[in-house]
View 1: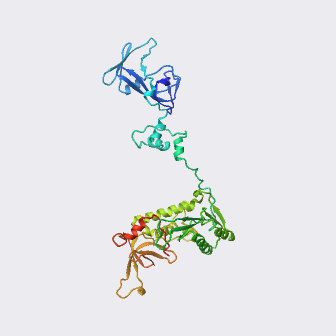
View 2: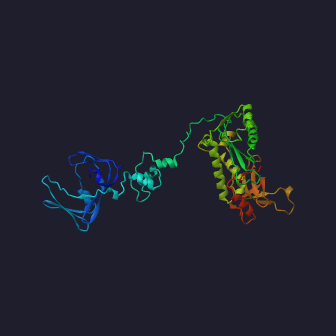
View 3: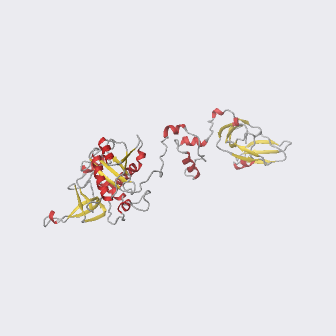
Length: 436
């Protein structure tokens, strides 16, 4: 321990503790570091030295010297210190007050070493400005070797602010929630996509009922079709539920703020909530839903190596499935049950992209023609209460309820004359179609 700050070549001020002397007095430690001393073998480093500002004398611990491999021998009036190779380090004579003062020359040339006031900050920089909380956790759990104890830093790091500062989080769980169906509808338009779909569509439009969280999806060729599909959605859902749409929440896209749209909403007594500029978080439910839908669609396509050309069918299938599962917003019931009043049946679900054999009606075949058509399962038709199947050979979609599935098998797209489909699909992540 030393009270002379100038002796340190490195000092970590984050180490704060206290020690007690033999007469039970407290000494407050305000850092720990290294000191260099001159010996006949050159400069040697004394590590783990406490900085105690109020200390009048420098103290060298006998116990720590023993722990580091030094041998101390006390005779009648002399203390002899040797290293582990039996090399003599020092001989110290005892004084009348029973002390062993050892004179050492300390190196004060601090410019030879980098002065480090806080090794937690140093490791924060070494890790590319990683969060100090993460580093502290890694240190405590000993996840990596060589990382010292790291304290969570309260000081602002200017480099982190300049490089990583984000907007303040939006409140979660405090927003108003609808108490009846259609009281609040969330809507968002996704697109345009890089490549159009089988039916020539490059957008998909979603409507979410805030009360039940049920989702409806429409596929569009142009943005201008949003208004047309809103009217279709309004007429169908209001008759089906017996309730009226009271509020619509969307972003400020041109398709939502046109004079035609605004006049229609006013005439029908629908309040329109719009997000502020560059703030998609205010329409978070619709934005997150689109991300969830596309995540499911991509996963289903990759599972059976289905070309992206059929992404629209995957999107439609994802919406069908999301309406039949619980979420944090509806933990005890599915959106389908909240909306319709009865539990959904799921024993008809099949693996997207699996091989299917569709029965060919008698009216569409001759006596010796095959009675089955090999297809790929691509979703469900709610309007027909049947399956949607894609024939890669004829490139047509079939809707049928007379289907047999081989869920462990998938279509070999490259070996069945569909290289062109696969190539088109690879040029786009999102391709939308309305097969119905």
